Image (cartoon, rainbow, N blue to C red; front, side):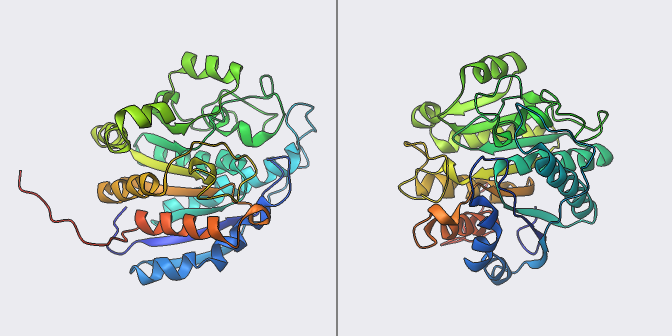
Length: 311
């Protein structure tokens, strides 16, 4: 990601059926009202708003007793996988405006296809209170927004939503930061598959900067692409209350900004999800504005430019 002048394509995904509650479908509109396009343009970037995504046909998908609303989630997954792949292949930066976190089944899968074509490994930085590594067999709720990581790693195949031979993400290339709510079966699956998890205790003990440096050093050494998936519940709900799955004890405002600033400095980020914003639960647009500010930090907003230090 070149923060000097990056072509960015906004992709609205008004998907809420993966979460089991109403409201997240209004997230893309709330982010637009909060000024995400204007903010990025003022930072010098070339922004195209492609509007809200229309779901692809999915009549072939059956209803699933342990994966609720599979038809509509699968329809958005198919459409978003294709859209993200096309945008990334065109040289633009896909910025996905959610929508619940099940949309990452499509966004990450689209980036995985693009990464495979350009011959570079895809890494995922998952900023979230939840690990989202459930499958229909392990999920206590059956809500698909708790399954996307397992899905794009190939561990939660759901009735042929995407082709079986599609490029997958290696679980050891997934870095989950800020985790503080994990189901018992998820914990076992995460350990078995080697997902890199830095829970809130890790952030407290090691510090945000040290953890993000580890992630960036790993991605850089592999010449990888980095997809960032930012769930609003990564941040403490006192700061960003507009989410349906609040978990106390999240990242502070400055910790979240520092992560985005370090990601910006690295120029390694190739795509971004902003997810789980529920304007119906927000406080006068507070959470939407926070997410726009996080995106601004990723795309180069600074209080002062930091001089490059001599080696």
